[in-house]
Image (cartoon, rainbow, N blue to C red):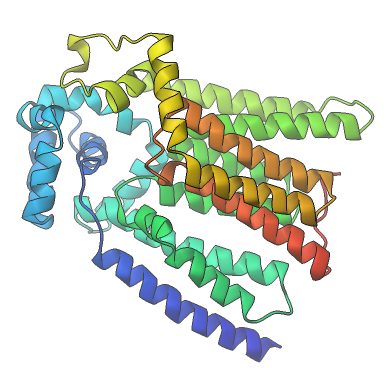
Length: 376
């Protein structure tokens, strides 16, 4: 058995290494790069914003292709202003600075000797490889007697173009997926509440908008336990939720984050070259009309998610598994309501993959005899 799993893992690691190297070769230098790099260089040069600004663009120019660098500069008028005016560039940095977990990982690689731009990208390249290992581990856990499912299905998932896109682009989404995977493993193996809280907190530190996922999960567990345990209040969960909320607010306040309305306005209506020069003003009707328009273009995620949820309900009668499935499904649309970028799958793919893992668990329980211990 050990020999068969050893050969299975060897096959998998060769395939994953090839995919990881392919992601490295096809890494992308895009218009998000200056924001994250500027956040890291602001730590390096805290008293010289102009020098940090100059270094951001000079370092990217050294590594990016001419086409990519031109796209960064001329993606829109605002990007041209950011390149020309270090003060305007500094005003939009809070959108990136609040992702302190991602920036900290970039800073560590930078201090280890990687160039700044490569540090931003390598966080995701390393995360892609680690996530592949975690997926293999989950499948081995769920299907301990099948030596083919774990390597083949893991490689298929990580060959999938949207997953590779997350690894190739300078965004925190692949990095946060590492902790989403660790979180779902902690649920499968019924680890301590403290460990699960740590993984949720890491997600929030990497992308503060994951506070919605963390709070919704803690709320669902609180309600589930309340009715399961003779209506006893779990104060530990309340403390966890309160702690995450406090940390989230502290991050937002410390970095002078403009706010959701500003982010929405700059992302979907008009990217302001100088944030302080004009207000992010739009009506609820305009927001609602935009949301409906984007929802129409959200068909792929909607259909895939519905199929995964329906399949989980079909294969499992376990209410906790069904609740988890609905929780991940709901978080896709909670995220969509706040940031309806329907063309960009990276914002939602993590939850879709969690839905997929929950379905795999339901299948393993039904056909493989593996038993997930429920929340007591």
